[in-house]
Length: 332
Image (cartoon, rainbow, N blue to C red; front, side):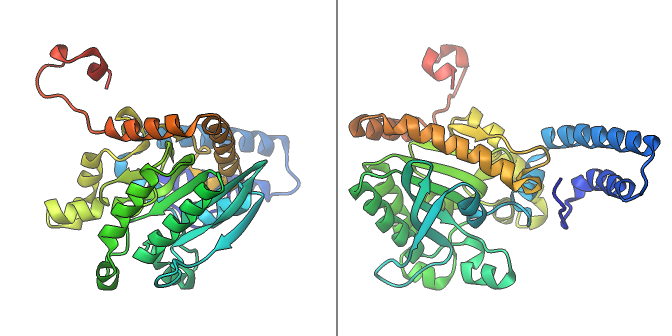
């Protein structure tokens, strides 16, 4: 059981029971009655977690995705991969700390790793711009992906960003253009690409490293064209409507799997990834291992064609009675 300092509003009943358990465990010597009470409380905590986290509203999912104790890219680099050698710079402007890139080893697989990094301390967050990458970050990612393709190595991307950096300097250096170029290059990169949304998947900042043969997300992550606050600010002119915006955006893992925007949803530990980093990392490692084995067996021409068709199929919708639609569209 993780000793989390931060407690979300809907987690308070869980936190209260866990506090009671800790107090009882600290009572020595323990009687049979105390041990029975502890076992009963643990069962109640488990049932409460199952109920609360199976019924999360979209805005509550956003809160879980932003939880301060949620494992970040650097945590997974330590827990999932055996080795990591970081590569820096875009050979044009500088080194963006919001994008981490480098060679990594996963069991027998050597891969190119690309991921957003938000930072944990205030100093780290400021240096990483809270995970909001600049154009040089995406140029760095593109250059390293091309290097991976040159050596016939797969690419793994971890997405965790509220969006690309929106400052004037980033726009002057071609933020929109470089994200579009990155999506184009990833769509035709001749090597397997796996993308996983581990927390926030916001706007073009996420799409900049989000085009792959397999796009997955963690159970309580979100993936959206815009943040709920940004959507509420545009549509309702006020951030107070963020919960309605989150509902309308259909950005949770359940919605996106149903809409076939993502291919897989990786189940999180009971109560969220922030409660058990090691278990979450182990499930992520199993997903990477199985997916790499599957993709590495495909010829490059078939891999690229499947990747193209995968994204071309997105956004199909019907107008009028579904009964008149072709069978293939009815299933969508």
